[in-house]
Structures are given as structure tokens and as C-alpha cells.
Image (cartoon, rainbow, N blue to C red; front, side):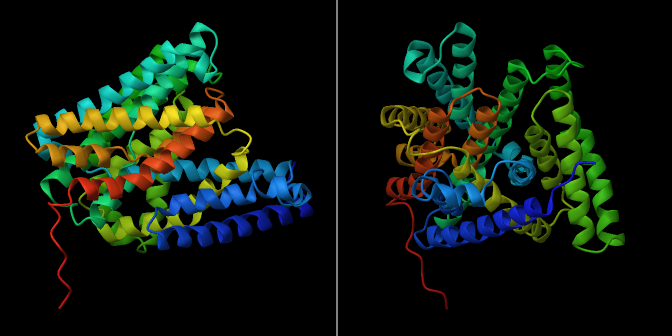
Length: 418
């Protein structure tokens, strides 16, 4: 039986230690600068990866991150981390909020999905050589990918920005959250089907079967699955040790759903996302329980994943200024115009509509996850991936300040406590 050798175990443990320590250090620096922790964690990976350490001290880099079995196990950690991150993103989705917003959320989410998707889809079709894609099938697949990546938002980032502005429970805040939820559900469904289309050597199901099974899985999980979860959770809270029992059961559901969607030819992250929605929407899952799950995943697995992003590619040698500027421009234009117009049609002022567009423009972790999955499936190259990561960071960092600027006359001054 194959197993890790003693030097490989030692190497893996040192890698995990260095990645967690460095990720936490730079995450805290990012927080001090009022930026999302993910920004610091990716910077930590760039420092440890081929961009900085690999360039300045290549021997140190090769010694710290050697190729072999330990690298394979580390990649396994990253795969588990990305599944868990999408699970926590699903927990953020509240279907009751979506239903309450009704017509207004429909306008904002629909235009906030269609306009950026159409823009991201059209530009590569018109200028395929600029993006480095060749034959007709590659152009079509890349156009579908870029359109989808422009449509997806970063719900956790948006929620944090709204909380910081004291607008999370406001009518506009709820509208932005509901619209982001809808866009993410539809966007991840499209992307998962796209991955099935490009082929992952799944011989036991056809593309049509994958589509039918995906839609069926989503509908059943969010209806019958929610009902079953609502029966299981009270028993769990009453009879199992808290919070250990709830945590174990939640992650068991997560991995089972992820395994099912991986089996039918859709990426495992979609199953984790959908079961996260079903579980997070249960009235028996308290906010305290959600917070425990978030803390467990966001402080252990998230840093490992985002630090590992910097280890994947050389950000300096693969940086393309014009390509990055083009992707950033497409991202800003599509989301701000689409979501802004949709919010305006919902009855809000132009200033509030602009703020909603700026808020919906935050991509953050979700865009990076999508880019990495596409890179691993050879749907994009390293240059596109680096540009997408930079775009995700820029949109996340700009979202809060731009919303604050758009609403500068709407946000009341905070009175000191007491």
C-alpha cells in the first residue's frame, strides 16, 4: 500500500504550518487596512509562491514546496477547502429574503445577471485573439465561462460591506442581498453545466442526463431536502452533543451532496453550495450554529485555499496589463449598469441604484474559486487566471468605498454608544 514517507509527512506538516501562519499574519494586516481577509491571504500565497520566494530564493521554494506525494495531499486539502467554502456561501443564502423582495429582486437580479453575462460573452466572441483562444469550440466555451464569471457575485463580501455601512437590514440592503443570492444560484448552475460540457471523462452519464439530474437535484434538495433537514435538526440538537453533533452532521451532508454532483458530471462545489442553501434556510439552524461552522471553515480551510492560490502560478510572469484592464472594465461595466438599471426599475433613486450596482460588483472569493476550477479543467490559461484574481480583488476592495460615495448623503452619522 502506498503511503507518505517520513520526509513527505514532515514536509506536508511544515507546509500547512507556514501557510496557516503566513495567511493569518497577512489577513490581519489586510483587516487593519480595512480590506477583506482574502486579500491578505492571497498576498501571503504570492509571497510564498513562485512570484516572490520562487524568484528570490528558488532553492528555498523548492525545499518548502517540493513536488511529489506531499504536493498531491496538499492539493487534496485545497479541494476539500473549496467544497467547504461553497458550503458556507450556501449557508448565507436566505430563500425567505429572496421571496420577500419579489418584483424588485427580480429586476435587479435579472438585469444584474443578463447584462454582465451578455457583455462577458460578447467581447471574447468579437476579439478571440486578444484572449488567446483559437478554434470555434474554444472560443464558445471561453465566452460562456467569461460571461458566467462576470455574472457571479460574492455574497459574503457584499453582506460584510452592507453591515459595515449599517445598511444590511435596510430595504436597499435586503434588495442587494436577495439579488446576489439569485445571481449566485443561477451563475453556479450555469458554470457547473459548462464544466460538464467540456468533459471530465464521465462515461456513465450523458450531457442531457447531467442537465436533468442537476435540475432535479437542485429542486429536490431545496424542497424535499429542506423538509427532511427540518426534521433531522431538532433531533440532532436534542440528542447529540452540541455543537459537535451538528457540525459533524452538517459536513456529512455537505460531502455527500458534493460527491453526488461530482458523480453526475457537475463539479462537487455545486452540490456543497445547494445543500448549504437547504441547511442554512432551516429555522432549526441557529445563527450561533452558523457562526461556529463559519469560524471553523474560514479560519482553517479558507486560509489554506487562498494561500494556495499564490502557489499555483507566477503572478509576475503571467501578468498582462491590457488583459487585466479589459477584464476589470467588463466586470465593472456589466454589473454596475445591469444591477443599477434593475434597481432603478424596482423604484429606487438613481443614487441608491448606483450604490446597489457598486455593491453587486463585488466578486471576491467566489470569482477566485471559479477561476481556479476553470484553470484546473484547462478552460483558461494562467494569464486569464491571474487577471481574474486581480479583478476579484479590485472589485471587492472598491465595493465598500464606492457604495459609501454613492450614498454619502443617505448614510446617517453614527452616534457614540451610551
